[in-house]
Image (cartoon, rainbow over all chains, first blue to last red):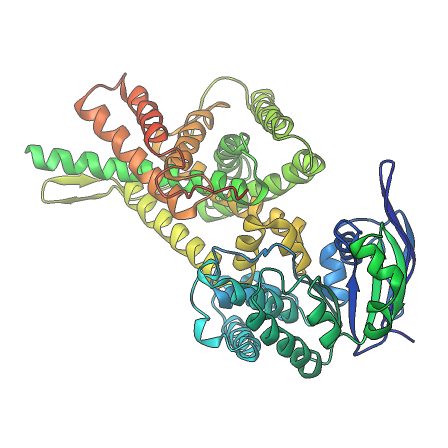
Length: 252
Length: 295
């Protein structure tokens, strides 16, 4: 059975049908791409998958459980994490603290042991620090752990968002335009990073991207969305040469 | 008594009332930071804290420590309860609706206290037993010493809590970007409740210290320190925790010195006048940061 099974997903905002009859099936360990022209509804799909929007109809089955109706925090705990199209880091917090916030549900100690500075508090905080640094190391950012996240260069901020999402220990990672605003070198580096984390963290990745080089370079499966509906699904070679897809992007 | 001693005494008095304002201002600023609302009922939590102390001592005959704990517990529960019942349903409503609800809750608390305890002020002796000390001609009262110690401990622990614990960093994350924090698995409702709990517990402590100083209870006793602490929070930069502490202390010092050397009647006018000045020169407050809207 697939890790993520989305059936007949749809959402209406008033009279506007933003996404209609959206189906997708993602196998565990797959690197899956969601593409489509601007305004096709890709981010809306992400928002439904993460509980930011409540779908009007359809079901989202993650690992056998329907997550429709859960709030974003609960969905995050059941194993879907995401990054954002516009970077949304906690800018006033350090790089390390950004990752530690996402470790919130992994570690616990009571309010009391925190206030009284008990052993449990110290041990847990140390363990959290170590784990956060370990994740940052994968992204080669452990040296910058203590600087404010808003002071990082753009490319690093994008990476930190991925690191933060990974810290929630997801089964499925959603990347919303990870290469947006990156130069070709940074994009190439990002492609390596994405493949690396898929293998290292043993997760499944669904990404939205406009950079076709990135999409055809790393994705194993693609779904094309146009005007809120699935146009086609298949391997990158098949999909990107499909005349219908070319028309959707470039017009007649 | 020399002029220098006199000034020093006024400064210490200013620090005392200033640190109480700072404790209250922390409640305003934390709630603003997290829930983006001004909780105008916060001043009345102080009043409830003071009355709860009286109830604990005079009616249940608790020892002082027990009455203090009772007062803190009642205010914490009340603060969290108010948020659940009155503010939570309005979380996606216009800010104006929440503001008016907060003012409504403030009147409700005052009227309830008027109904239960009556309008006649009730005397409440200080729970601080010792008389104070005299250093080099400067006398410092017992309540002043206790106030300074207690408020310093509270502020230091809060700073540590916010910066060094998991729950504290969850609070900072929610205050920066509620949506992103939720998507990282943080329970926003719990975090908001925690903020109200901490703010109200601090208000209870402030209420106890305040009533020990002025030794009289009336239903409107929270209004003036409440509004001054709000001024302190804005002065320091609303949303900023160190700002609230700084704003409170500055406000207390200005108030005390202007009472002593300018005019008792004008001291409130001077305090609010300084607020106007600061807002004209630096609208985000002393330690507040201007949020640049990106287009």
